[in-house]
Length: 172
Image (cartoon, rainbow, N blue to C red; front, side, top):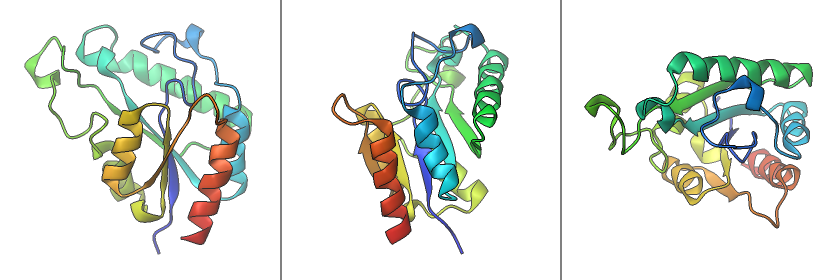
């Protein structure tokens, strides 16, 4: 039987964004991120990250540099006894240096491609899932995928949004 999950945007939702985040030295969790992620793990709900990484398409960093950053993120989460099931990323950008990396594509948020890809891979029911992000494109991607979408704003903290997400998934 398929289960619900929580999908997160990465930059300025879980990780502080100082601009094209790929350098491990720049890695820093957002306030409340570890508490929020631990809430989900304790509730037995799978955690995924979906992130636009247009800096790859723009030639600012490589897939290998981004993967090293993600490996560091996984390790830092594991230190806090948190499991992040998987990360999907979109390397495309409208200002890409090659035609193959230019948009339109089906994965760059607000398109729902990354959520759908992870749902197929991990047998997730998107209708029972929640997308959390800080930008309208995150919310739109979640809605287009069939998820409930919750936006992180100045008046909402991440642990509170995750508590709401847990309630939504448990009631589905």
